[in-house]
Length: 195
Image (tube, rainbow, N blue to C red; front, side, top):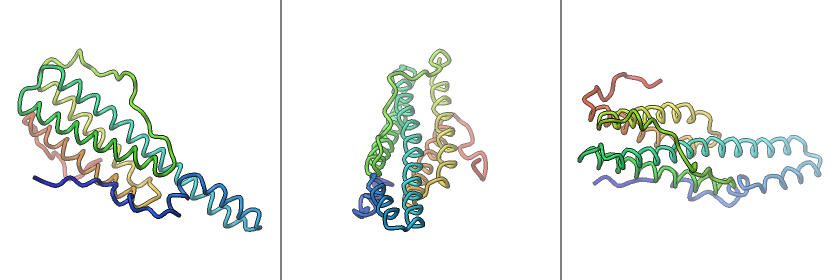
């Protein structure tokens, strides 16, 4: 069995100083710099706060997508249309999304933000899901969308640790997509590059 690695584990060891920068204590550092007549330092401190706020927004967007994926897999698993081993696969992938969501929420909190929450209700095209292939195709589409979303998000992070962790999740989403495509009898890796 392959050991599961939390891609955000590197963030567990954030120094107290780095944590305080992300938690809002940066405002007092900016104020102190301004009062000391150091506008350049104040601007740099404010820039760090803006970077942290931007990273929190990106993380919360990813968290929202993970929560939606958890709900989608619950709908698929509860549909009665999935048979073993596809049902087991869906539940395993749902578990991965739960782990992603937990790590993202914990990181948002560590950076001083408030994690996004699951919606009360998601709208999925359940009227179009009539067979196992329909459910797997729907899941594959969600996973493909997740790959694209993480691919777009990775370069936007200001912290390398966050970009690296998001890239790790991107890899997991890409594997989900490939496995679902293979389960559907499709080419699991239809192109050399993702776009």
